Image (cartoon, rainbow, N blue to C red; front, side, top):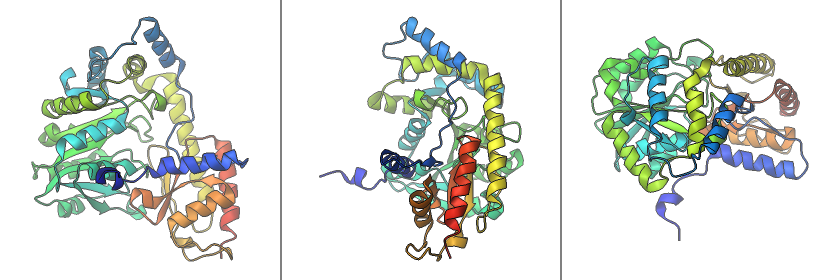
Length: 397
């Protein structure tokens, strides 16, 4: 009955785990959810006040498809201020979250049979929207020993005459990996030799960066016109439910995304755009933003310290986002007498059912040797979660 198109894509694994959490909680279990990539902070008051003002000023009608002009101008100012990139408002498209922004780009660029290069681990949605476009994902596998980063030689080997697009995130979901300027330059030098390949740079975690200035691959002149930046307000400003994302791209791609969006959703909520305008204009320097970043850093350091003491869990030291992507292959083949752990999915379900801690198996992100921890929750929750995990893992022999 259903189309082949919908049958061949998968439900988001992160949302599926969240549903399992809710089911256990409804049964009365105290589940600690470390699965969702959602800040536990409330949207700052200065941003909410801007939304309230938007209501009072009647921003309640259909908005322009690409977003209000003043918001697109503010995004251009942000690109210049934070990234030293010059965009015009007609190169900006505001969407219902960065997820829609990414889907717009993929559907506007790809034809059936085109190849899309993706460093693995990757965010779960990349491969699914590529399937919708009837294109072919090509994975470059990175390991914890290399901080989950790919190098220029790996990239060069993955490019073929069918390559059309490269998608990656820095800071990265699920690994927290942050590419340095020199590392991005090496990749850009490879792309410079392949003018048919576009680069979609997912920078939604830009402001959750523990190493200082955010670096974007769009800064390199030789490839700048082929880079599409996807960003938004969800992660850095604790605005997940406001659903505002955006792209900066060359005019041809931006206009194509606007045309596609006009037939799917039209423009995003005008009230949300007023909130986003305030957030983006203020940038990441507001005191509340600095406090959130400091809290994420403390949580990262706490979680790394605790997990390093748990036998069999291998942890690296990510420099951004709010995730740890830990290698757990030590537990493959072990059993508590009833359940045998053969895969990361087995271990994630074991910890959910035995420890009541929700995590996402690495298979969702293209790496079956790992499990993702989100530390977008309190230090108290993290401490209790690791205690439960260590106790449950101790029963596996």
